[in-house]
Image (tube, rainbow, N blue to C red):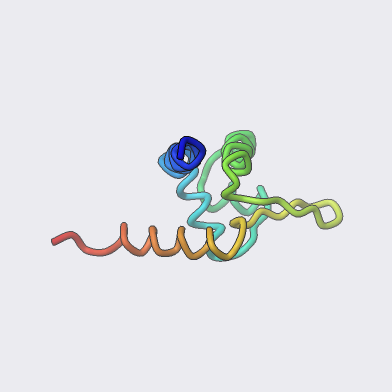
Length: 95
């Protein structure tokens, strides 16, 4: 039970940051390079890289090197569905 609680806490802290949420939201639409993410979230390259490091440590994002470029994507179908559902719920109009 403690391991599960730790995972939930790590997930919440990772996704609870506005810049990291914006990065994940961009990655939900498909894999991206750091350069693409910099343009989308309007943060510096070092800031985006630091946020990606945190997201990788929380198993939310994986990286894949292709030649000179590194592509980032949401890790796994389950996580992809979870994040899409979470995003949809958050965007629903409040009653």
